[in-house]
Amino acid sequence: MCPWSPNLRSDDAIATARAIDALRRGWPVTLGNGGGAITLLAIETATESALAEFDALGRADIAITAGRAETLKLVNQREAATPGRPVLIRREAWHDLAAATALADPAFDLAMPLKGPFCSLAISEALLAGALRLTGLAGLLPAVFVREGGATDALPVSALDAYEDLTELAIAARARLPVAAAEQAEIVAFRSRADAAEHIALIIGAPDGRPPLVRLHSECLTGDVLASLKCDCGPQLHGALREIAEAGWGILLYLRQEGRGIGLINKLRAYALQDQGFDTVDANTRLGFAIDARDFGVAARMLELLGQTRVRLLTNNPAKVAGLEAACITVVERVSHAVAANPHNEKYLATKRDRTGHQL
Figure (cartoon, rainbow, N blue to C red):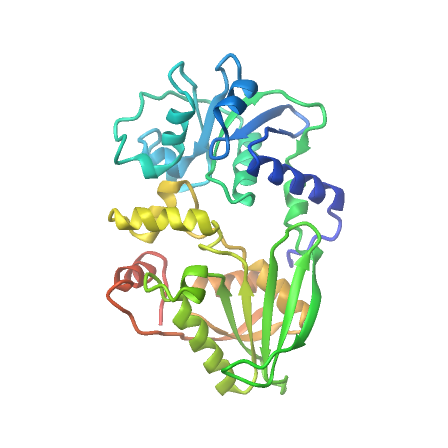
């Protein structure tokens, strides 16, 4: 079954958007699921005064992900196999905002290596999982102060699904756009009523009866714009445009999923961890994120709106093939996409090959 869910409530999506804005501003948010409610305050955007107002008695516990908890030796590797699973830590008297920030952010791991001791608590996962999912949608570190109860108008956890409802994605504008790789090209912009991200398709050539050559390219400010040598994104982008042009017709989807879905700021945090010797996989999990948090269902929905359900996919990443096919796009051929390495990204490319299954 394709993942389009037209019956989700648009007012839930709006309420989720407001909650995301509140978290980014350092304001508390209440989540509920019919069986209870919790109120959370994002550690990353909290201030001393906001925390004092939120938790005057110092009783709000701290929720992080299992991936981050494994780094802190609070769970075993089996429990950490699901990196996004919530772990609740009992708040002690000495857990002020600075201590909580060090707990949440691995940038402080070398400066403060002996954190703790900590006591993890038994939890009901549904609400806390929703809380950490909400921080991810907000582009924040997955770590919150949390206390039971809260406002009577709690945001339902189910509302988060409405925010990511792919049926809300629609074509917003399109125009002719000659580019260096191909003068016959058209740019198409997609936008959702809930999520502010604006995804782009660049259509090169015109349909000719063959499945288009398609490239899914995740936004990379550092690589695409600043020509970073730490990754291969910039060369992949321009190489894909050339290959699509040579094929005669195809589509490049430019997805607003920076840093494999964790956002620009968190990607830069991952870069800092890589400078400490961690590879891209371990950097993401130390931050508390999944190895790859992207949703390729967005790309599938874009292709469907463009009338293309059979494609030749230009990729080395089997997850992209699986993601499209799970969303009812048939990948008739996977076309390898190789670019040359440089001394700054050799380890990065090796990690993609050896740890995330990329193949030529």
